[in-house]
Every structure is written in structure tokens, then in C-alpha cells.
Amino acid sequence: MTRRRFRRAGGPGNAVTAAVTVAALCAGTWLLSDGTGAHPPPQPSAAQAHTGAGDRSAVGSPAPALPPSPPVRVRIPAIDVDAPLTGLGLTSTGSLDVPPADDENLAGWYEAGTTPGERGTAIVAGHVDNADGPAVFYALGALRKGSTVEVDRRDGGVAVFTVDAVEVYDAAAFPDRKVYGAAARPELRVITCGGGWSPTTGYRGNVVVYAHLTGSR
Amino acid sequence: MRRTARLLTGTAGLTGLTGAALAVATAGLLAAPPAYAVESRGPSAGSLEVYPSSVAPGSQVTVNTDACGDDDTAAGDASAVGAGRFTLAPSTHERDAIGQFQVPPGAQPGRYEIVATCAGSGRRMAGDLLVTLTPEAQLVHPRGSVKTGVGGALGTDPVQTAAGVTALAVAAAGGTWLLHRRARGDGI
Image 1 (cartoon, rainbow over the protein chains, first blue to last red):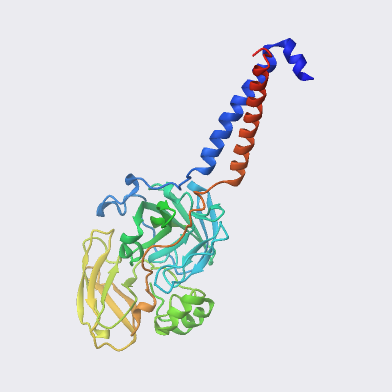
Image 2: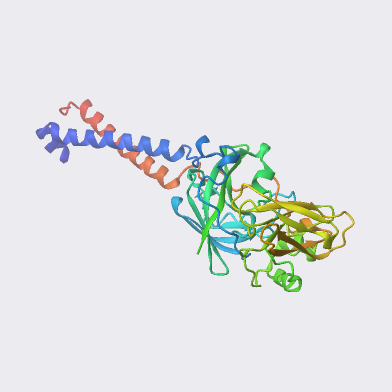
């Protein structure tokens, strides 16, 4: 029925159909290539790495250590992170355990170690993704020096950390001492997966955010 | 930080910990992690910080204070634990004076008071040192990388894929229709 009308009218109906066809073709192609393509999480640039011994206090002046109190929540405003913290232990191989993967907005902290804000190195870890897609620390690699990480503590206080560096390491060359080792001031590490991904090995390493305490409230 | 004097409450606070943390901690109750439930003020001005505050015999201990002012040394005394006297020298870090001593390998587990006296003002400060046989219980560091991802963010987004397939179906229908009309000579 419409065909007859179009036949009389000539171009307009065909033009509309052609335009819709082309648009649908482009949209479909883009959706499929983008939707099935890789969406790797952001990785830190070399500019966010430690630049040497002199930069340790270059960003924000250190604040006095807080008394120990376990953390309950971590917030990273720059990448819209606001997640509860669960306690983490160690695996049988001595590596840091991870939070349950099915809750995409859950991070963990190493509860046999230093509490965030206390003097020493406190460790927070969370998933970059799970089977369903991006998770709590998907954008961790996009953090930059000077960004703020806040940790709510059970004592009601908030420990405010400032990022010193964001680095990425291959799992085979993970610098244990640098990441986990003791510190003479209150420091924080925030860890997630990163360093590229392959179907056989999964993520090749970890993104590690280094921060130190610069305030509390 | 002075928290080593609260051993009993510190141990009680442990019951709140779980799983691996408890397993680690029970390996050395004397080296109990900080007592969360107990009030414990941070290093107030004028205190003597002993780090680590919990060590094994034979370990190196660092002591620092900001109570002596700029360019002032302090005389440290760790004779309580058998380590004798040492000197705290001004450092480049803020106003801290820092010194070190080694806990004798034969030191007995227990709590010892470390004292320091500013050379200039004569001000006296004290801090606690806990010597345990399993000091690492508090400081067992994880090793290696962390398995915090499976690649789920890199896979197919089902919604987007469905939308793409739908769009391509529309395009195919439109193209077919146009070709059909052209074949019929319908004015394309």
C-alpha cells in the first residue's frame, strides 16, 4: 500500500528509508564493534609513578598518625568510589586475599596489618572487575598524584590520604617490600588488578596507589 | 605511639578479628595488633616514638621525637632492655631527632621503657618497647600480586550487543527493501 504512494512520490520515501538504513548500519556496526571490543580499565601513565626519593612529601604535608581504629569505608571522590570495606586475610601462598567478587561495590583491607591512619602501611584492595563487568576499583588507574582517598574509621573519624604515586606492576615483578613494607609515617596502598589482560593469563599484574595521611576529621 | 602497655585489653580486642587475622595474631598473643576498642591517643607533642613498638630480640629499633626542637640532639637510654645508651640526632624530617639501637639477641620478652633526654632543654621523654618472640605476628606482610579481576570489564556487553544486532537487522531490512524496489524499477 505504501509502495504505491512512494511510487508516485518518488524520492522522499526512498530517501527516508535509505537514511534510516545507513544510520542503522552505522549504529549497528559501532555498537557491535564497541560492545564486543575491549574495554580495558584505565592504566596509570609514567607521569604518575614515583619520581624519586625526593617526592615522598612533595604532595601534601604529612599529618600526625591517628590511633588505631579499623576502617569501615573508603571514598575516592575523583573516581566516584564510595564502598564499604571488609576484612581481608592471606591466602595459603601468602598473598593478600580479595573481597568476594560478586559484590562489585565492595573493597577490603588487610586486617592483620596496620589500620589506615595509624603509623605504618595500611593496605586496601578491591576488584577492577568481576564476571558481570566493572567493579569498585575499575577506574583506580586513572587516579593522579594529589588525589584524595578518604577512609571512614570505626572510631567515627575520617583519615584523609593524598596520593603520592600510581604505579602498575607485572605480577612476576611485584615489589613486595615497596608495596607492603613498613613505613615510618601513616601510609595507604590501594590495590587492584591491571597491567593488561589476556584470555590465558587474565590480568597480568596490579595497579598500586601510594598515598600518605595528610589530614583527619 | 604508646599502646603496648595494654596487653590484656589488646588481647581481648583481638576477639573481634576474624579468620586469617586471628590465626596470625594467635601465633603471638603478646604481639597483639592494636587494641581497637581501647582509647589510644596518637603521638602527642613531646612523646618518644618507638618503631616498631613490637620487636624480636636482636631487632633494630628506631626512636624519634619532635620534643627537642630544631638542631637539638637527645640522649637515649635503652638500658632497660639491655641495649645501653644511644644518641638521637637531628634529622631532615621536620623537627625530629632520630636514633637507633639494637635489642640484644638475648633480651627476654616483655615491656621495656625507653627514655630520651633533650640535650638542650633537659626535657625527658619515654616510650614503650615490646619485645616478643614472634614479633612478626603484627607485621606479616602479604606477598605478591593480588587477584582482583577476571576480565569481565573487557567482555561483551549483552545489552549493547543486542542493540547492535537489532540495528543491523533494521539496516538489512531497509537495504533489502530498497534493493527490492530498485529491482522493480520503482524510482530509485
